[in-house]
Length: 274
Length: 266
Image (cartoon, rainbow over all chains, first blue to last red; front, top):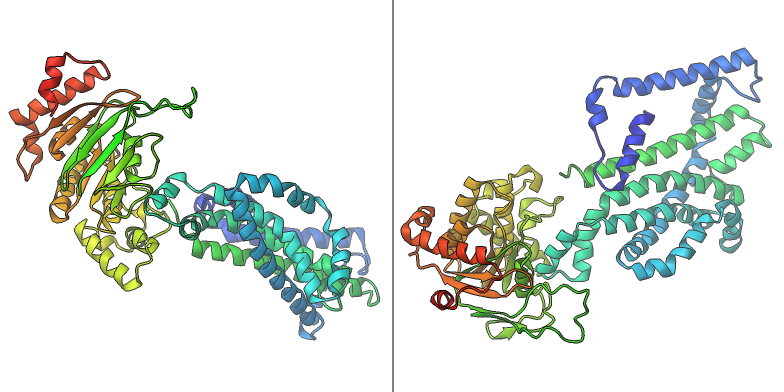
């Protein structure tokens, strides 16, 4: 599974995902992934049994699984998960909306890169943990602030990917478009964006997973609902370690789900290019 | 409708720094309406540069390009360009690729569809309208590129070594197809080629360029009757023209004996 992921990430630089691995081991693919999960769960269970950790330190996998099911059934997790998803979606809209034009600008103009890149990199180097409370201070507790925090963390990878993608456009296609009198806008829309799309989606894969982290960090800085809030509740006033693990599982699944959504979009939009 | 190209010899203005490479020098020739002109010359003589100047993709430092009495100042809708490689958009269908100039010209969806269907018929690709470029052979891709160049019904078609990536048999068929398209449409054709037989087969006139900086060393009329067939290249008349071209190519930039030069220049 991780090998397959690595290979995908390696393909981010602008080509369609490489499927040679899947071809080489056609049968095991999903079976291997499932086996990996089984091994992981077994090791976890073994650790709990052998080391004899109490449930409030490290609950056994089946305890977490049971808590996960119960917490979803009795509506403990659901409203928090809904709040977090809302924040992430808002963050994606703002972040991607800002990253695409800026990335295109940086990709097109060396001057823009020289002038803007220092601020841009400095902003990325500033820990979001330090900035999050400021954002909450400015925009208040709740959805807007946390969406903004998500937007900030996913902004960098998506912008860089867009910049790289726009630069990777085949200059021969650009000359072709010029020969048929494309305006700068048409060139962007019909040549540069489609050509940059694989790279942009690669950046988005990184971006969506970072957005999940951003949402949790944001919720810790100030929110009344959300999976980050639930983590704090579970380890604090509720002192319910299995619930803490169940929440972490929910967050992980959310990340995987978003990632797969981007991969799916990539398959649909990019398809096979040769 | 004629096309006039002129770049005087005194390109040595103040702007010409020692680092800049001068590709062309004193190139002047005219192309009549419906004429097919082949530009032939040694490697790196600026043939492709010349074609891009005519297309308005490059602006000459000195001199002008006239098209139908008007100077060419940028890419012109009256000119269709076929590049050395097909240069199709890899993510778009053949239909969308051929219709690309129409989309850029903001033609309506209905008009685009109608024109593309017509063009695909013309280049015999109707069955592949929905295919992606990578699903087609090299020759089919280049045909699609020609259809694209014809989309806006240009009066001049410029081709930059359009056959160089094709195998010998495809090249020959392709030449025939180009002539068929030329018969059907009222286009003037200027093409750059490396191949002497190709120039003899296709062109009314062959413009010979010298080594860099390229200038016109000779213009050779190909007097073969039309419609042409590839076999005509192997007739005595065809061979005589090919021999002339070969002679000029071999001489390159060297000044040939003046008597000979006068005999060939027209």
